[in-house]
Image (cartoon, rainbow, N blue to C red; front, side, top):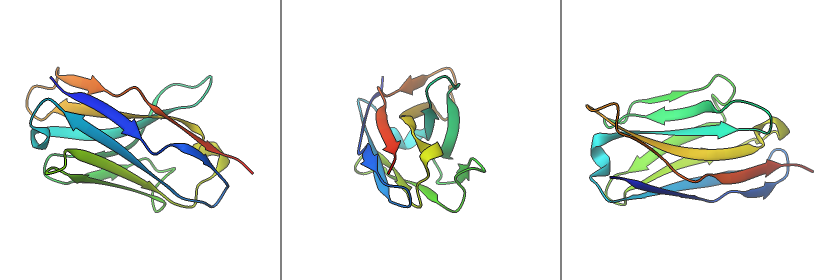
Length: 118
């Protein structure tokens, strides 16, 4: 069992930066692949970035070069550094954990709101 709690969202002007954190508890986080997803009003949830248990990262084309995902297994925390934010980045951002071997073991956080507006 893994519990995920996101933090760091808020209101930021276009061009600004935010760093989201996802704190995990309840299990050995290092054996989970982690990811950030987002859902804007009226749209489906979409992948933003992922980082494997081994540290391999992947990004949606819309955020490449602007967002960076990282993990600190000792702190059981995954981060999403978001730079050069745009209004279209406005969404609720969710953290996801998926067991490296047992892919049916998937956990989600409750989400944190990011609003990019002047």
